Length: 150
Image (cartoon, rainbow, N blue to C red):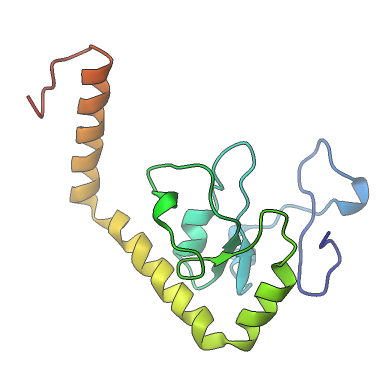
């Protein structure tokens, strides 16, 4: 729908499937981050680029997340942490133009996204959470009686 659209630089990068005319070479993360907006689309699983987009000065553009990971995607607020588009992408152009014309609101999304990511940068807290998750896993799979929580 948006291949060769003036607002978009996108294409098909996989070696299998897709339309040959839509094929484009893989773009490095550093090159993607030169853009103000970066699409973050789920496939068969979570959109793995969401974390580095939200850690940058670019803005993630995506439909509401359907998959949940340790990043707690379900806690992300549309148009506060990312630019929310419809599942069929039909409002992509409208949303991009809105934020191009409202740069202060775009910068607010970047600030909010960076703040959201900051919670995962506390190494001590992340290690403790990892131990608690392992403890629950071992407990519920009958491998221990709960060595941390008792």
